[in-house]
Structures are given as structure tokens and as C-alpha cells.
Length: 169
Ligand SMILES: Nc1ncnc2c1ncn2[C@@H]1O[C@H](COP(=O)(O)OP(=O)(O)OP(=O)(O)O)[C@@H](O)[C@H]1O
Ligand SMILES: [Mg+2]
Image (cartoon, rainbow, N blue to C red; front, side, top):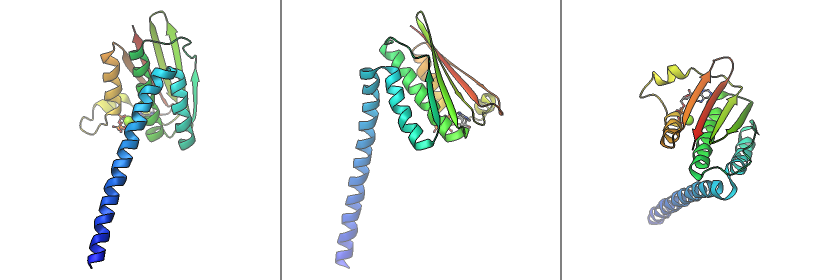
């Protein structure tokens, strides 16, 4: 009896250690993500992220029209996080087989278009369901707003989704 009680205390201590290891691993990965964009730049950091996502999801991910020069740090970080959430949404909701991320650079601004070939959705019906909505799209919009950017979503049920972000500096 006593040994069992001791064993379960050890187990719960082990669980707590595993939980804390998991959460510190998660925070190391999160910090590495932020550092990665700063060290490598937006596109190489996205390529690294997408490689991992593609392996885990069987999704074909491509990046087009790569910005050649480094962008202001806040622009790179914002677009990294926006693209990351958009890709998570594609994996989670779209039932897509392919997604294409296209950057277009103009003087003092950049746009990023993310297009998947999945089921699509009606953005109007999402915003009409307050309380049931997730935080991804809200967070993307908010991140962009803070740095003076904006997001547009065009989607038709049968033709996948196009989410676009535009940022100026
Ligand atoms: N690429 C996509 N294809 C199809 N539906 C999508 C896509 N992206 C978003 N959606 C729809 O928009 C909804 C809102 O997305 P949002 O990221 O805000 O929330 P979530 O992904 O459900 O939750 P969270 O991001 O908080 O984990 C989703 O629940 C889904 O119905
Ligand atoms: Mg989401």
C-alpha cells in the first residue's frame, strides 16, 4: 500500500517534471522562432517553418517572389507570424493539398498573398458568430493593425481561400 502510494507520488512528480519540460521546450521553440526571423530574415525563416509543417501535414507549400532585401524588423516579424497562423489554419480547416505564399514588394510596402486550394469559407459568416470564433484571424488582424498593415480575406466555398496582408513603412 505504502509502496503504491510512494509510487504514485513519484509518478505525479514525474508528470509535473514532464509538464514543465514540455512547457520549457515550447518556450525555447517560440524564442527560437522569433530569433530565427531576426537572424535569417523573413523568407528563410518561413522556409524553415514550412518544411516542418509540410512534413507533418503532407501539404505542398510554396513561396513565390521572395523579397530580396531585409525588411524592417517589425515588418518581418509581423509577416512571419501572420503567415504562420494562416498556414496553421490551412492545415486545421482547409482540407487543402497545396498552399502558395506570394510576396510582392513595392517601394516602401509589401503585400503577402496566401492562397490554398481547400474548401474555403465565408469570412462574413465567421465574424457573425461572436463567441464561437477562434483567435487566429483576430490576432492576425490585430498584429497587422499595430504596425499599420491590413488584412483582406477573399474566399468562395468551392475555390479555396485567399488571405492577403499589406504592410507599409
Ligand atoms: N484556410 C482556411 N480554410 C477554411 N476555413 C478557414 C481557413 N482559415 C480560417 N478558416 C475558418 O475561419 C475560422 C476562424 O479562424 P481562426 O484562426 O480565427 O480560429 P480557429 O482556427 O478556429 O481557432 P484558433 O486560431 O484560435 O486556434 C475557422 O474556425 C475556420 O472555420
Ligand atoms: Mg486559427
